[in-house]
Amino acid sequence: MGTRPTPGLQRTTSAGYRLPTTGRPASVSPAARGGPAAGRGPAGGGQAPREAQGVQRDQLWRELVEAEGRGRRRWAENWSFLKDYDPMGNRKEPEKLPDSVPLFSDTLPNSANQVVGSRVDTPLGRTLIRMDFSFTQGVRKKKLEDELQPA
Image 1 (cartoon, helix red, strand yellow):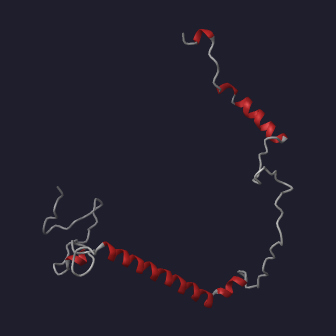
Image 2 (cartoon, one colour):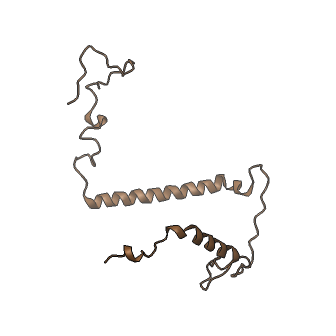
């Protein structure tokens, strides 16, 4: 198994540096050391029933949601004025949103279900297809000659 430190000798690293002693004082409780009693539920020992765990999780969730709401309200009270200013301290003008946005585009092709269409039927698209065809011509599957065909 492992080697135990020999009493009287100090531990060192491979470079010769002395390591601190790792012995724990006997007065430390097993719970503080992370022993078997650590991490148990209620003081009576053992695990809490499943319903109690669900209730605890629900209570914890409610407290977290409430704390988040408090933080949001506190930010709005103390710091929300910052959203109206740029990093240099000048007041920002709010952006005007357009009254209406056209459904069709002048620059992009539209398809039947109003998503951006394909650009394959443009001169650039045809050139790219032709180049792709010429570059991959040698690696395509070919029909074997008659003498190499299986019998």
